[in-house]
Length: 113
Image 1: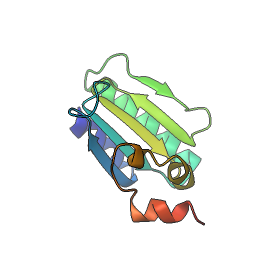
Image 2: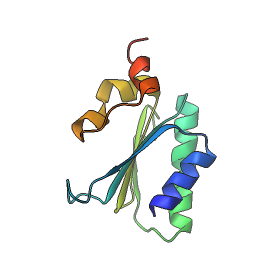
Image 3: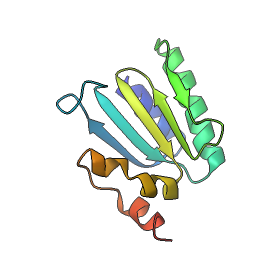
């Protein structure tokens, strides 16, 4: 399923894609994927395309939260949890820090602009 997620996001030109392995850190999922889109429209499109790709791959019951505003969209695919952000929102919440991963340079700079 991770490959489906990465492929879909790469096709949609997601920026600063980070994959965090959670297997040894948490029981909520095997992986967390964090990526940015340049606008609310791109974040929404990425979320929609990813939801469809997961469904086509046989993932049932994937839940999507935040699609109304598209500043931060969470897709819970069970084994893989995906967070899609606009860069300044991603820099504000800095989920990578919580999991011991450095924020990508482009995203870190977006929080100060």
